[in-house]
Each structure stands twice: as C-alpha cells, then as structure tokens.
Length: 190
Image (cartoon, rainbow, N blue to C red; front, side, top):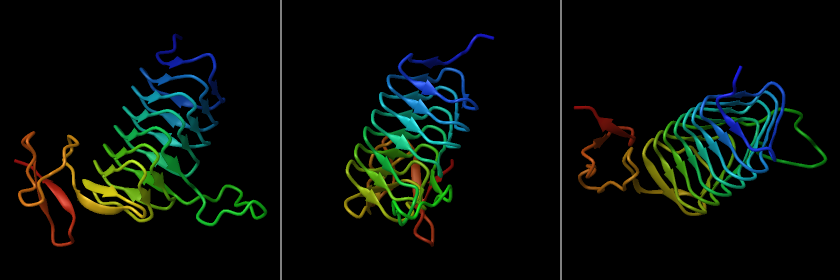
C-alpha cells in the first residue's frame, strides 16, 4: 500500500504511529510511539512529538518545537517556531513522575507565537492567539489575544486572525462576536 504522507529520510518515526494523508514531516524530526498525527499537517525541522500525543488535522508545527506527552492539539492549530510545552508542574530530576503528566489542550484554530511557553495543565481556547514570547500560566478563553509574562488578555481576535475592535466586536471579514455574562467571547451566527 502506497503511503500518502512524506517523511524526510533524516527523521525517525517509531512503530505504532498513525500519520494522516498529506502530512509532511521534515528534517531531523522524531515522532514517538503511540503518537497520532492527522491529515495535511506539517512538522518543520527538528520537531519532537512525544509518546501518545494526539495532533488533529491541518496543524502547522514550526521548527524546534517539542510536543510532550500529555499535550493534545486539535485541528488547524499553528505552533510558531520554538514555542514550548511542558508536561510536569513540579519537575525534579531525582523524583521522576513515571508517566503521570498534566494535560494540556490546544483547541481548534488557536495560534501560538514564536518562543511562547504554555505551562502544562491548561487549555488554550478556540481561535485564541498567544503572542510571541508570552508565558501562559492559566486557561485561555476562545478568541482571546494574550501577551506578556505572565500572559494576560490584551484584546480579542477573530477566527480569521485579525484583532477585533473592542467596542464593536466586528471584524472586517464580516464575522461578529458578543460577550456572554461570564465574560466569554462567542461568534454570532447569522
């Protein structure tokens, strides 16, 4: 059976890995056992995908990113160059956790900027955008624009990626949003 994905010869893919059609795994990558990568994904140079990691369809992981066990990435997520995930909240070399990892979820359409850090045990909301260099230390809501150390919400972004006007919550692409009583942004369906 012909494989419908590309793996560069310099990369290693362990046994028991699932890779979707149209996915490209570039130079010097390692995909570890039990990982699942969806269709039409791209893994840039020097990407490491840990054991049992689940990655959805259409995900773009740029150079020098390690996605550790305990992290799940939904469809159409962008991980910028050298963004960082963790999977242990209190790491100690002399007290290993032996496979007990804090869960991190990156929801559909989110974008993680270059060199940002996502501390484990948190969820990044749907279509949220994390600025380059930000450090995420708490859950991030849908469509939130986060920046700083620690990251804080500095605005809202549309599903298309453009920053929303804080007063109208309308995007030039035509999408409109509202804030619910809990302070969460949601898209108005017409």
